[in-house]
Length: 258
Image (cartoon, rainbow, N blue to C red; front, side):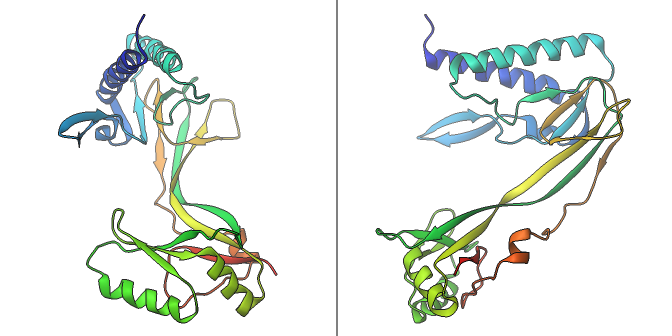
């Protein structure tokens, strides 16, 4: 009986072969290099890792043999994955074969955010408020720490992929309660870019919205890409009062409850 490790190896080997084959087809959008496994150094060994995200649209150019192969291989990839994983959903990088062939696909991307509510804790914790892009910004880090210390907010600095500044949640709540009589706060942070595809099918007046991942179509179709969108207006920033700190920071903090 095959071990779990052996099964994972079989899955990754098959996925790599399938992605390589798909990358050899006609790319309508995206970059074929994004479909490649990447080599990384781990404990003096070279490991191959699958791409974390794939954003590409690929045409099979109405080749029936290629279409059948890709269709069959996608089902086999799913089978191999379910044999070794206990997760209900497939990875976002998995290829999706769009049928029937769409009339057109419109692509867009914009900033995405995650937010959560914080309030006073029996055991204090810290939340990230700022990243410093290079480790040589010591003077800026020290200035920010001093500015926050002046208003009674404790800080922590870590060195994970550049310096990261975090602040005490309890001190932040106390400060917010002092200046805004706030009891809880909503913290919002940029989580990355959201890639969206709007797919228009024949005989349909409404486009289907889906994630722009690895999308495969049977034949060439128009693909329209919009420019990356800047920051969208957000309901949170429209209806909630913002808590201002004496430093510039990427994390936005809003008054949740007075």
